[in-house]
Image (tube, rainbow, N blue to C red; front, side, top):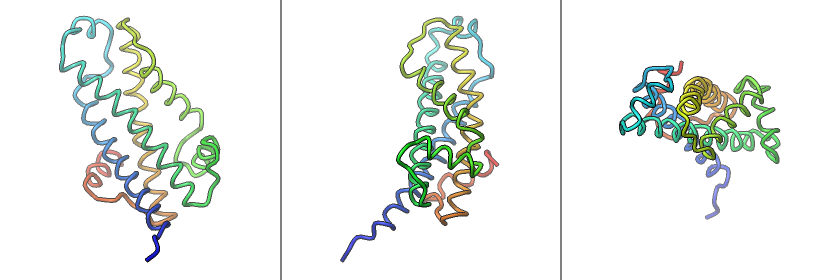
Length: 175
């Protein structure tokens, strides 16, 4: 019996789409634990508040996971749609034309903010507050990007998230 590679690739994309829903839901839940915007004084005043800083760490991690999941799903869905995937800029250009992302610049800005946290260990509470306020602002953009990508995959290639475990919440919250 031969392997059905196309079926396997479609299943992989379905799992990536489910991961987008899951990451978005958990990021949204963590984000909802805080009052926005946060400020440096609040962070400094509560600098030993484990719950606060665990929530911030979760937001940081979940934002990164959501963006990584979106990037993987975009590349994989472009491949299944017969689009060039030899560079991620070509993938982004395709999804910009499809209306999944508003602009390549928006994606790049979001990526830069995400990477700053991974490589910059700021101890200045103003910088930390600014970073998390930016993540909060950009999260809505990522949520909508995920929603539009899932819709495009459904419409163009008939692929939906692998399970409906998070679909109702995703559709309700991010509609």
